[in-house]
Image (tube, rainbow, N blue to C red):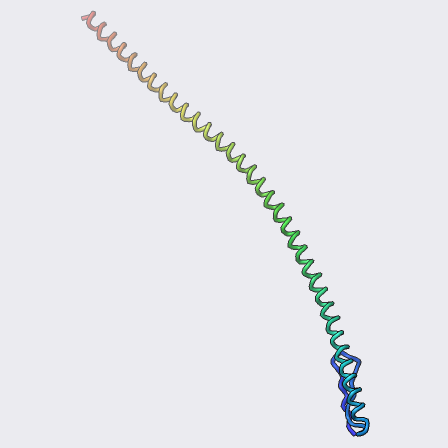
Length: 145
């Protein structure tokens, strides 16, 4: 008589079926079907338990990733706000520097205008003095001649 033993991978359970007696064949086939059904239920249960465990682990990993993303969002928002404040401070400082430079440039232009005006005044005084001197010389020459 031959007997076949079936064992599912990773399972300690096994199902035996085959010919032991022709008279008990019907009874034995029913027992075999019950044993196979029990084995399938055990294997399915083991599969479901494993899948549930893996799913819980995936959900934990996903939650860790989501927490990390949330943390990064907060850090990024903080950094953006810090950079915006720094930019605002820099902009205010640059604006102040530009205002000082414009004031300085305006003062330089005014000083140049005053220098030019003084130079023209000096030229006019020099010219006037020269003409006065020349006229005095011409008059004195007329009186002496």
